[in-house]
Length: 450
Image (cartoon, rainbow, N blue to C red; front, side, top):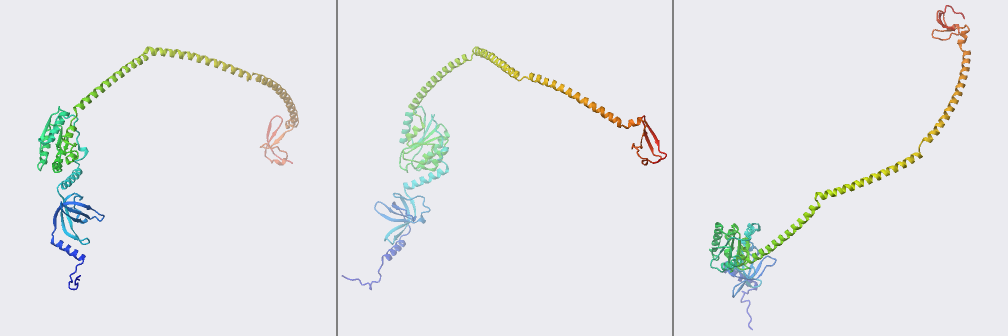
């Protein structure tokens, strides 16, 4: 076995050195490139970076898009999405795999259209074009129906067949327009505006048959949405198949799954109308019969009530009532009179028991007795007092100075009627009053002797 002379060959690479130099070589050799392909194996870990593979029919390459480059991305990548990507060619040293570092990404084909569809849908919804309050009611029985579609497509034939079957009496006006291609959207707008300007229909159907998203794209244009929103005539959209939804469906006053369904929505079914009319006829007949029966019952009740309320009958009832009241009044009067008589008799018996005549007789006897006693006592008392008075008068007469005066004596008093007992009580020339048996003598003292 031959040994390599390491000392002779000093340029030995490590794996890390090799991978780093290859990475520098790739990054310096390849400028920023644009690449397209289909996303597969897409992962988004908690770090916020995206890792995926970009493939075509025969090859694939690992890709990474770091969080800082995602801020302005208008969509969320997912498996199966065709994209156009701006990227740098690089190598991941830890695995020795070359990869693309994505700096920008945009959708390709139907994916791009789908993204544009979502953006416009959000924009128009925020502007209020989808509000239910703006949607106009459809006429229950339209007088004339307008159809905005291609005059040569299958949709117009389906619509006319349904209208003829369900509501053959209504006239139909077709406003021909393109429904596919770059010029279709302005043509649809022109047809809607023409129908509104002519004002000959009271409902419009905007329709076309099924197709891809690209085929249906004119009905996702903003100008078509505004034309439907500004229409004064109610619009029913019937674009594509049941699974297809366009911007026109959300703005229209009513969305139908297919053009045929749109024709059914705007028209009542003749058979259904005949059945409805028959049901209404039966209902009216029943209501009239019920009303007639009710009226007859009311008339019979009214007649019976009128007989019951007849003045003669009421007068008879009042007379009977009066007789009854009179009888009751007499009975009550007799009862009251008997009650009062009985009560009076009871009161007389009670009064007789408590009458004061006997007491008065007894008291009068006592009064006479007391009067006799009073007269006797008063006479005795009077005689006794009279005797005492005579004795006192005799004693008084015996002691009275008047009796002394009758015997010739006199009583001398001072001017102020003080009796003079002693000569020293007066002074010469004092005035004296001398009382005698018959009168008084006024005199003056001339001389006083003890």
